[in-house]
Length: 285
Image (cartoon, rainbow, N blue to C red; front, side, top):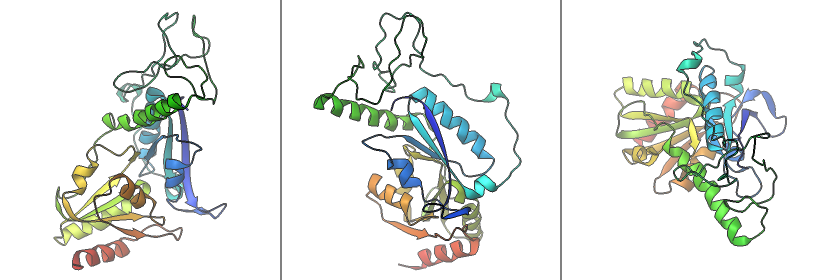
């Protein structure tokens, strides 16, 4: 669809009812690909109870401004957790500017797109002089008429995918905690940030050349992701699942060797178990 929607997924141990009071990161592939047809969506992940507010706001902003669903991933520990944070003033928040069609616009076409973002205008129901169209059938480019033409479908699939990829132009670049190049890059995403920051900081106190990239923006990845990967001798991806983010990285950026450390016990990472893994990674030739 090309209408705004925010879906919040608080991940617990699965499948089915599974471990409803425990936490996992096992819904990432569902968020990335769990739809019928070629239907890309923006996927972001909060990494603390406090920044759930920030990323929920950004999910709404991206969804409304780019006319696409956004899936916000949190997890059981963030959902059950509590943390003090200062609620920002509304005036200090980045503005949200949905691409609303103007009333009585004689040039309006439902699928005419912005040349830079590929975002189409949004004719809200009741906008004077315009006709609102909604439905699940494929539409023609520009005019928005129902179409089963194969070439048009290919065009629209490509446009929807490229629109989501271009969101990389507006999200922040990925930050690194630690040296800008070194022996080991630890990669995490979402709610594992606390344990990974603590473990990497402990390695750095021991004089080890270890850095952390903790991802919050997942689909699309930040534009500088590959530039970060190529600056480290080894890469290890740590997740509370069987390896969903590492497999996404292998698919998206296949020119790198990714090691992985996975835990699926409904329990968080322990700092000691992480540092043991990192030491072994540095010792192995």
